[in-house]
Amino acid sequence: MKINGPTAIFLAVIILAAGALRFAGFNSPHGMTWDEEFYVQMGDDLGKDPFNYNCRFFTEIFERSNLAVPEYISEPLFKHPPLFCYMLAAAFKAGGATYETASIIPIAFGLLLVFVSFTLGNYLFGRNTGLAAAILTAIDPINWACSEKIWMETSLAVFMWLAVYFIIKAAVEKKYRLYYLAGIASGLAVLTKYPGFLVIPIGFTIVAIEDRRSFRSPHFWMWPVITMVMFAPWVAWNISVYGDGIMSKIALLHEVKPHIIALSAAGIAAALIMTRVFKTQAARFAIISALLIFVFSRQYVFDGIVNMLNAAYMPLAGWKPGMFQYKPWSFYFRRLIELSPFYVFAFAGILFFAKKGSKEKLIIIPVLWSLLFFMVWGSYQSRYILFASLGLLVLAARAIIWCWDKIGETARSTTTMVILRSGFAIILAYALLRTLSVDFAVVIANDFSYF
Image (tube, rainbow, N blue to C red; front, side):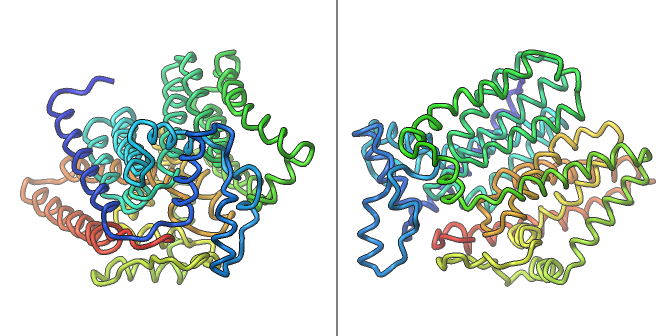
């Protein structure tokens, strides 16, 4: 991928500005979440002993504070794979075991996501969409919040999107050796957190739609093989600790619900069947429109639209555990548009799925897999959908650039074009100001654990 000089400079400015704001957020006076405390302590311990991976030391703290002790805290092995904490351990070796040193890892990966969004937008839709996607990602409240916290979500999202990018590129360009890079990226994703395994069904779905000949290539099958080979040491470590009870222990600690994968798969299968059964673009457009209308006409989501249009309203964020746990299945739709009106463009961008030969579907498929999975999972937290949010922002950028260009192409006179583009620019200006108001009123204060 070649980037010309002006584009590179503009992209660098976006990333540097985003980095400065995220460091400002981290440096705001704030309390640390339990997850951050766990990761920092385990990173420090792993630097001294690479096999000391648990947070049992917090059991006494919880008991002294009269807090219920989560089961995973007292386990001999922490519930998440260890890559993130090993990265913290490496950072501590270089810069000392401090919170400030630890913050470099999530912030760096958060900034990498800005570059990843540019890469995806630029590759699929052109430079303007890529730059718009980078801007939207840089100011996105979810990316910003996850970057300023010592959480593993930004690193997980980077590895997952790198895997998806290599899969897309391999399928589109028939460069099947890229599946080896997809395997490495997928391996890093699953070693960061178990949702990294979503890359597997996402990849198979993309290949099934875009290039079925990949299934006949041995290079393609090396992708899941490499992923599992990289994951194998973590499995072996768990077996050495839990023996035959490994699967039940993992299921218990993560509250695994087998029906989640089945329901997510059913939703994606329905989307794929729709593209086969309904041959005309008009029919597919009508069905997708009906589904979007159904979702956004729910009273809960509609209230979110009202909140989005209220400049004084700020999305709820705080420290109460499980504060969003019992919200309805439509939680993420409302939460996203409350955080940023640009997600309205993103959801509208799903209509591109109806187009024949749509490139947009290569972004929509990962988004749908992730959203459906976490909608069914429950225990809602915005950080869980960081991966999906980046894809949605690329879609939003695509929709914005498409609308802007379409106005220029279809306007019957220069005056009409100026009027229409001015109106559209006002809408974009409101979306920008609304997003920034959430960033500076809620996110940069960094005074929350749940949002």
